[in-house]
Amino acid sequence: MSKFLILARDNGGWRDLSPEEGQRVMQKYFDWTSGMRASGRLVGSNKLKDGEGRVARGGNGAEIAVKDGPYSETKEVLGGYWLIEASGYDEAMKMVADHPHLRFGSLEVRAIQEMTAP
Image (cartoon, rainbow, N blue to C red; front, side, top):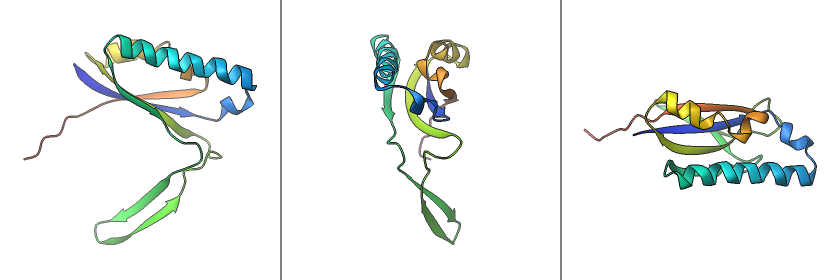
C-alpha cells in the first residue's frame, strides 16, 4: 500500500451556509472520515485553523522572511488534509469520488514518497 495526502482547497463557499446547513455538511465530513477509518485506510487527518498560519520564504544564505497568512480572504484556502493508504492513484481517486468537500472546492491527491536517511 502507498500513502496519499489529500489536501482540501476551497474558495470560501461554506461561508454562505446557514448554521444548520453547516452542521449537516460537517456531519458529512465526519462520516466520510469515519468510513476511511473503519476501512483501515485512514492514517491521519486534521482541519487547519481558519485565518491562521505563517509563510516562510528565503533560505540558501538569505534571510528568512516570515509573513502572517495565508488569509481566508485569498482566492483559495488550504483547509485541511487526510492521509490515506491506497494501492495507487486509481484507487485513491475512487476513494475521494464521494468526498463532501468536492461541493466547496478541490481535493489535491499527492503520493507520498517515502524518504530514508542515507
